[in-house]
Length: 208
Ligand SMILES: CSCCC(=O)C(=O)COP(=O)(O)O
Ligand SMILES: [Zn+2]
Image 1: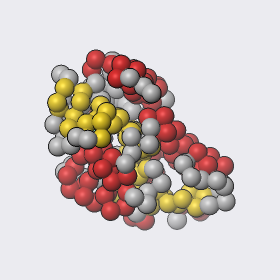
Image 2: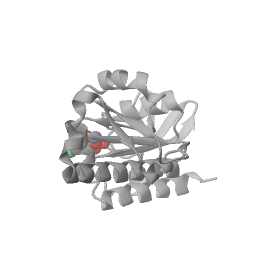
Image 3: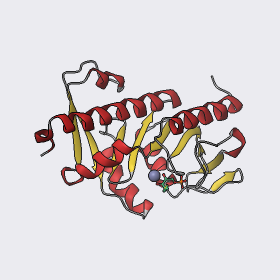
Protein backbone atom coordinates (compact mmCIF):
# COMPACT_ATOMS: atom_id res chain seq x y z
CA UNK A 1 0.00 0.00 0.00
CA UNK A 2 1.46 3.37 -1.07
CA UNK A 3 1.19 6.26 1.37
CA UNK A 4 0.51 9.78 0.05
CA UNK A 5 4.19 10.77 -0.02
CA UNK A 6 5.08 7.65 -1.96
CA UNK A 7 2.12 8.16 -4.29
CA UNK A 8 3.27 11.71 -5.06
CA UNK A 9 6.83 10.49 -5.67
CA UNK A 10 5.59 7.57 -7.79
CA UNK A 11 3.40 9.81 -9.97
CA UNK A 12 6.28 12.26 -10.46
CA UNK A 13 8.57 9.37 -11.40
CA UNK A 14 6.10 8.10 -13.99
CA UNK A 15 5.58 11.63 -15.43
CA UNK A 16 9.33 12.17 -15.62
CA UNK A 17 9.88 8.81 -17.37
CA UNK A 18 7.11 9.54 -19.90
CA UNK A 19 8.58 12.98 -20.57
CA UNK A 20 12.02 11.41 -20.94
CA UNK A 21 10.73 9.14 -23.70
CA UNK A 22 9.61 12.22 -25.66
CA UNK A 23 5.90 11.50 -25.18
CA UNK A 24 5.06 14.79 -23.39
CA UNK A 25 7.03 17.60 -25.09
CA UNK A 26 6.40 21.34 -24.79
CA UNK A 27 4.14 21.13 -21.68
CA UNK A 28 1.98 18.50 -23.44
CA UNK A 29 0.36 15.70 -21.46
CA UNK A 30 -1.41 15.40 -18.11
CA UNK A 31 -1.36 12.68 -15.51
CA UNK A 32 -3.54 11.69 -12.55
CA UNK A 33 -4.10 9.05 -9.89
CA UNK A 34 -7.19 8.59 -7.76
CA UNK A 35 -6.41 9.76 -4.23
CA UNK A 36 -9.82 8.80 -2.88
CA UNK A 37 -12.93 7.49 -4.63
CA UNK A 38 -15.54 9.12 -2.36
CA UNK A 39 -15.70 12.06 -2.64
CA UNK A 40 -13.64 11.63 -5.80
CA UNK A 41 -10.26 13.32 -5.53
CA UNK A 42 -7.50 13.16 -8.14
CA UNK A 43 -3.83 13.84 -7.55
CA UNK A 44 -2.77 15.49 -10.80
CA UNK A 45 -0.09 17.31 -12.74
CA UNK A 46 -0.61 21.08 -12.79
CA UNK A 47 -1.55 22.75 -16.07
CA UNK A 48 0.83 24.55 -18.39
CA UNK A 49 4.11 23.41 -16.87
CA UNK A 50 7.08 21.49 -18.29
CA UNK A 51 6.07 17.92 -17.43
CA UNK A 52 9.73 16.94 -17.19
CA UNK A 53 10.15 19.20 -14.14
CA UNK A 54 7.12 18.29 -11.99
CA UNK A 55 8.07 17.75 -8.31
CA UNK A 56 5.96 15.98 -5.69
CA UNK A 57 5.08 19.33 -4.09
CA UNK A 58 3.86 20.70 -7.45
CA UNK A 59 1.07 18.10 -7.78
CA UNK A 60 -2.44 19.41 -7.22
CA UNK A 61 -5.57 17.77 -5.79
CA UNK A 62 -8.72 18.14 -7.87
CA UNK A 63 -12.35 17.37 -7.01
CA UNK A 64 -15.10 15.79 -9.14
CA UNK A 65 -15.97 19.23 -10.55
CA UNK A 66 -12.40 19.70 -11.79
CA UNK A 67 -11.64 22.34 -9.14
CA UNK A 68 -8.28 22.56 -7.35
CA UNK A 69 -8.81 21.74 -3.67
CA UNK A 70 -5.13 21.55 -2.65
CA UNK A 71 -1.88 22.78 -4.17
CA UNK A 72 -0.77 25.95 -5.89
CA UNK A 73 -1.09 25.04 -9.58
CA UNK A 74 -3.93 25.39 -12.06
CA UNK A 75 -6.12 22.45 -13.11
CA UNK A 76 -5.88 21.33 -16.73
CA UNK A 77 -8.95 21.79 -18.95
CA UNK A 78 -8.38 18.09 -19.76
CA UNK A 79 -9.23 17.20 -16.16
CA UNK A 80 -12.75 16.66 -17.56
CA UNK A 81 -11.44 13.70 -19.57
CA UNK A 82 -9.60 12.24 -16.57
CA UNK A 83 -12.80 12.50 -14.51
CA UNK A 84 -14.89 10.91 -17.28
CA UNK A 85 -12.46 7.98 -17.57
CA UNK A 86 -12.25 7.40 -13.81
CA UNK A 87 -16.02 7.72 -13.27
CA UNK A 88 -16.93 5.47 -16.23
CA UNK A 89 -14.27 2.75 -16.04
CA UNK A 90 -13.28 2.77 -12.35
CA UNK A 91 -9.67 3.45 -13.38
CA UNK A 92 -7.20 4.27 -10.62
CA UNK A 93 -4.87 6.29 -12.85
CA UNK A 94 -5.01 8.12 -16.20
CA UNK A 95 -2.00 9.09 -18.30
CA UNK A 96 -2.13 11.33 -21.38
CA UNK A 97 0.75 11.98 -23.77
CA UNK A 98 1.49 13.67 -27.09
CA UNK A 99 3.98 11.44 -28.90
CA UNK A 100 4.89 11.85 -32.56
CA UNK A 101 3.45 8.42 -33.43
CA UNK A 102 0.16 8.83 -31.55
CA UNK A 103 -0.32 12.27 -33.12
CA UNK A 104 0.43 11.10 -36.68
CA UNK A 105 -1.72 7.95 -36.54
CA UNK A 106 -4.64 9.66 -34.77
CA UNK A 107 -4.96 12.05 -37.72
CA UNK A 108 -4.31 9.47 -40.40
CA UNK A 109 -7.10 7.15 -39.17
CA UNK A 110 -9.49 9.83 -37.82
CA UNK A 111 -12.10 9.23 -40.56
CA UNK A 112 -12.36 5.53 -39.60
CA UNK A 113 -12.97 6.43 -35.95
CA UNK A 114 -10.62 3.67 -34.82
CA UNK A 115 -7.27 2.05 -35.41
CA UNK A 116 -7.39 -1.75 -35.62
CA UNK A 117 -4.25 -3.49 -34.37
CA UNK A 118 -3.75 -7.23 -34.74
CA UNK A 119 -1.16 -9.94 -34.48
CA UNK A 120 1.41 -8.46 -32.12
CA UNK A 121 2.64 -10.29 -29.02
CA UNK A 122 2.72 -6.94 -27.20
CA UNK A 123 -1.10 -6.86 -27.30
CA UNK A 124 -0.80 -9.19 -24.31
CA UNK A 125 0.43 -6.22 -22.28
CA UNK A 126 -3.17 -5.00 -22.23
CA UNK A 127 -5.08 -6.33 -19.26
CA UNK A 128 -7.08 -9.44 -20.15
CA UNK A 129 -5.36 -10.17 -23.47
CA UNK A 130 -3.97 -13.71 -23.62
CA UNK A 131 -3.00 -14.08 -27.27
CA UNK A 132 -1.43 -12.14 -30.13
CA UNK A 133 -4.07 -13.66 -32.45
CA UNK A 134 -6.65 -10.97 -31.86
CA UNK A 135 -7.71 -7.59 -33.23
CA UNK A 136 -8.01 -4.67 -30.84
CA UNK A 137 -9.77 -1.47 -31.94
CA UNK A 138 -8.33 1.69 -30.44
CA UNK A 139 -11.08 4.36 -30.65
CA UNK A 140 -10.27 7.72 -32.28
CA UNK A 141 -12.29 10.85 -31.50
CA UNK A 142 -12.08 14.20 -33.26
CA UNK A 143 -10.33 16.78 -31.14
CA UNK A 144 -12.26 19.68 -29.61
CA UNK A 145 -11.36 22.57 -27.29
CA UNK A 146 -14.55 22.21 -25.26
CA UNK A 147 -13.52 19.46 -22.86
CA UNK A 148 -16.99 19.02 -21.37
CA UNK A 149 -18.33 18.38 -24.88
CA UNK A 150 -15.37 16.10 -25.67
CA UNK A 151 -15.91 14.11 -22.47
CA UNK A 152 -19.55 13.57 -23.49
CA UNK A 153 -18.44 12.26 -26.90
CA UNK A 154 -15.91 9.90 -25.41
CA UNK A 155 -17.92 8.58 -22.46
CA UNK A 156 -20.25 6.10 -24.28
CA UNK A 157 -17.25 4.21 -25.70
CA UNK A 158 -15.09 4.13 -22.59
CA UNK A 159 -16.45 0.93 -21.07
CA UNK A 160 -15.49 -1.08 -24.16
CA UNK A 161 -12.26 0.80 -24.96
CA UNK A 162 -8.99 -1.16 -24.64
CA UNK A 163 -7.62 0.97 -21.78
CA UNK A 164 -6.98 3.79 -24.23
CA UNK A 165 -8.22 6.08 -26.97
CA UNK A 166 -6.79 8.65 -29.36
CA UNK A 167 -7.81 12.26 -29.85
CA UNK A 168 -7.12 13.14 -33.49
CA UNK A 169 -4.10 15.38 -33.98
CA UNK A 170 -3.79 15.62 -30.21
CA UNK A 171 -2.68 12.53 -28.32
CA UNK A 172 -3.28 9.29 -26.46
CA UNK A 173 -5.16 8.65 -23.22
CA UNK A 174 -4.39 5.41 -21.37
CA UNK A 175 -5.56 4.17 -18.01
CA UNK A 176 -5.43 1.25 -15.61
CA UNK A 177 -6.60 0.12 -12.22
CA UNK A 178 -3.30 1.30 -10.68
CA UNK A 179 -0.63 3.82 -11.66
CA UNK A 180 1.65 1.00 -12.73
CA UNK A 181 -1.01 -0.69 -14.87
CA UNK A 182 -1.82 2.66 -16.51
CA UNK A 183 1.88 3.17 -17.24
CA UNK A 184 2.12 -0.32 -18.76
CA UNK A 185 -0.90 0.36 -20.94
CA UNK A 186 0.54 3.68 -22.11
CA UNK A 187 3.85 2.00 -22.97
CA UNK A 188 2.10 -0.87 -24.74
CA UNK A 189 0.03 1.55 -26.83
CA UNK A 190 3.05 3.68 -27.69
CA UNK A 191 4.92 0.55 -28.79
CA UNK A 192 1.97 -0.68 -30.87
CA UNK A 193 1.48 2.76 -32.45
CA UNK A 194 5.15 3.10 -33.38
CA UNK A 195 5.19 -0.42 -34.83
CA UNK A 196 2.01 0.31 -36.78
CA UNK A 197 3.45 3.51 -38.19
CA UNK A 198 6.71 1.83 -39.19
CA UNK A 199 4.85 -1.10 -40.72
CA UNK A 200 2.82 1.34 -42.84
CA UNK A 201 6.00 2.92 -44.14
CA UNK A 202 7.27 -0.57 -45.12
CA UNK A 203 3.93 -1.55 -46.64
CA UNK A 204 2.01 1.63 -47.61
CA UNK A 205 -0.93 -0.30 -49.14
CA UNK A 206 -2.01 -1.31 -45.62
CA UNK A 207 -2.85 2.34 -44.84
CA UNK A 208 -5.85 2.63 -47.20
C1 LIG B 1 1.11 22.34 -25.71
S1 LIG B 1 0.15 21.31 -24.75
C2 LIG B 1 -1.55 21.75 -25.10
C3 LIG B 1 -2.52 21.31 -24.04
C4 LIG B 1 -2.60 19.82 -23.94
O1 LIG B 1 -3.12 19.16 -24.85
C5 LIG B 1 -2.01 19.09 -22.85
O2 LIG B 1 -2.03 17.88 -22.83
C6 LIG B 1 -1.37 19.81 -21.69
O3 LIG B 1 -2.33 20.50 -21.00
P1 LIG B 1 -2.14 20.90 -19.46
O4 LIG B 1 -3.21 21.93 -19.27
O5 LIG B 1 -2.40 19.67 -18.65
O6 LIG B 1 -0.76 21.41 -19.26
ZN1 LIG C 1 -3.27 17.02 -24.42
